[in-house]
Image (cartoon, rainbow, N blue to C red; front, side, top):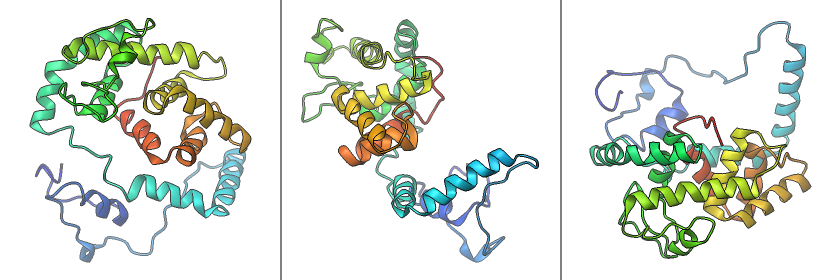
Length: 255
């Protein structure tokens, strides 16, 4: 809102201001107008919650002993702007409005949140049906025609028809959930997150990520800060950033 001129200014933590100033060209960081200096960011816990306080203190102690965790979080959220794209540009909004009926129809058919799938489509191609990858993925959902033609999906013409492309991408995501994530230990949220990871990195790699988490003392049934750690070490940051960005617009409610 400050960048758009709706607000004249806002007070935020310095590290946040410096990061977002890289994205929004109309922001000016006024370090000379500090409201508070030397402050610390800390957990606030209601009184008489000894178990919660104990859990937080143990978590902080473990993570403080592991500087790589701190560095990973900082690198993931506060150093790279590559994963951020302007979904609110006039062109992006026009494409969103033109295509949203397809996302609603097929997300409903295959039991997904349509906003989540639209966010994935934007992450994949910026909703551009003409997009082509070096690997041969095509269209809005950046799916290989051979994957769409597989008997489990059986949708053709995804390189030419944006509606077929969107349906194929969503049906493939459903196939990933039903085939590789039919695990009663996984809750709906983590099924969705891991389905996105499998869409990006492949179901075989997702299995490797979960095995790495289990062998490293992390939870193989939880994506954030657990299975995603395996993804970062096995294939790098792309899949970690892909899942975080694709699911940032909404909380998935069904899978």
